[in-house]
Length: 222
Length: 114
Image (cartoon, rainbow over all chains, first blue to last red; front, side, top):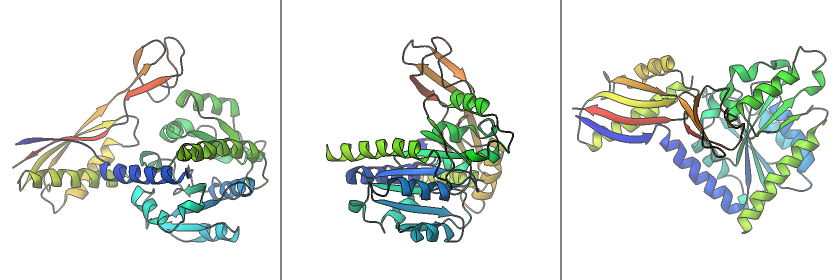
């Protein structure tokens, strides 16, 4: 006997993601899902972003890793609340993990939550967490050909950060080709070249993010 | 290897559907996957064989239909099928205001049960 089901495979994840999104919107909190490969500089970028915005906004960080709490400790050492999620082997975060992590934060006190996803250019791009925007980082040493190999993550990202820009002279990175491929995948995402550990280029990226935070606050008030 | 998570999602939805219909065995599950997702059909079949083990879907066939990416331009109405690299700008009028019609599906269509 054939029975029609007609539902999304990730329906359970999508339902919780929608609930997360409604909750964030109700509190006027902007939630950033930051994705990149291991070693691209996610934590360094987060710390640089915190430095650029902490005078204006109240920030918390959710750290996703397969194991360990070293990233959460780095963020806490910076004086920012951080929640560590250990996925225990899973290659991406899911919306239920975010729901549990957010339960430990005071959303009324926050303007921005940065989620550091598990280091991976593949799986995180298929999972809705309820975030306000997905943004990805590619670092120069990874090479300009990565958009060819991992196109989905470039397509679902609303902005692309090009980190370790200060190493451009050392690596054979063709920036024009990189920008061209990213544009062919994603017609609208701005590209922000930065050197997170030196703070270079961070201001432009932080201003883009501040604009999005303001929009989230305004829509919650309205 | 997130195909295992996808396979588990398929399995739990199929079992719930089968149980709601009073069935004891699932023979086939029909799913639709868009080509723009990061799901590889071979890896999904491999994960499915692992996930179904010991359940009412223990012998169930996973029938996967891959769906092309298709986009419509808001400016000129042109619709076209494309790969990952040619969906960001209208090939007819060079417009950027586009709606992706298909290509990101991760959907269960039906189950065959006894």
